[in-house]
Length: 81
Image (cartoon, rainbow, N blue to C red; front, top):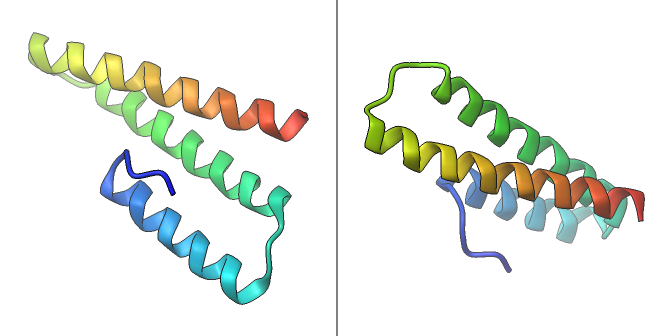
């Protein structure tokens, strides 16, 4: 199980694990949910970057934004393979 990320991401992963155990495993459905979650995360970072941030905070948010984009892109690539 992945242990990194935001509390929202952790909550979402737990929800998906519970849903999976109750409804059965569907890799495509799990990837679809992961894609939505990653896209929401990227959008949240973009919203934050559109606001006024102190330079040290902006640097951190930009780095996390890049990681979120990489995660989103990885999920997208898993969906096409």
